[in-house]
Image 1 (cartoon, rainbow, N blue to C red):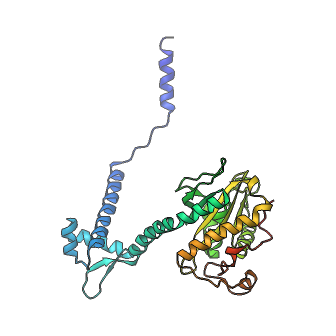
Image 2: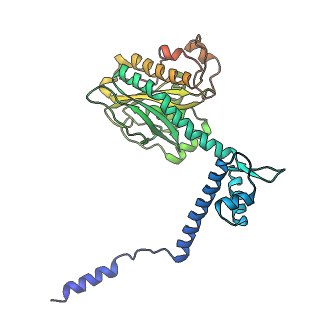
Length: 320
């Protein structure tokens, strides 16, 4: 009897799964990959600091690597557009991809800074929390928020992510994409059901997004969470592209039909003001009806400022 617990313990140990260990070859492979990434980033930093194109020998000296290693890394970076080579001199400089990535970081930084006063104004006017949302990797990402003044209010941490198909801001961002891009995101992310109101069919979602494009705003009618509603409108850049969405969110009882026109108008007004600050220009004298008969902007949304002064009703976008 004294040996029985030991016997049982040994059996359990035999049946327990043996943890998988990485082989030395796998460990070395990971180390090599990390080292290559680190070296490639060092090259990009040196090129970014240089006011002129650089030769391989100069880059080798700066990053303290052999010329053949530098050439291999530069070839990989050139294939992705991060580095370009002057065909005449053979020297290297940053490519368009590096400039685009750097520009995106600066743009989002500037976008947040510009949006703060409009979000604060919207939150003060409505009493509800106001959000600035962008599209990233098939999801809506909240990058700025002005808290509402009500004792019960919505709070979203900057950096939080949400699905596109069941949020107001997400619908605005999704509606601005091409059909091919929308189909790709839906295929990758799916249409998960969060509440009994979530749109889970692709055909139904396409009808909703068409209504969003026509109306110039979107509503989350308790589709992500029961008891929470949201109104969102697009933010355009100077080229007319939708680069973000402004939204307000709060308890569903404060977003009823008798407040819809007022809330939509206030959200659209804030989005139009921020768009104008970003360089977006449109025909302020146009009406919603005339814009719908004409061609839409690059984003698919009507190129008009009239939505800032009122709202464009859409039969499929309703608040009870």
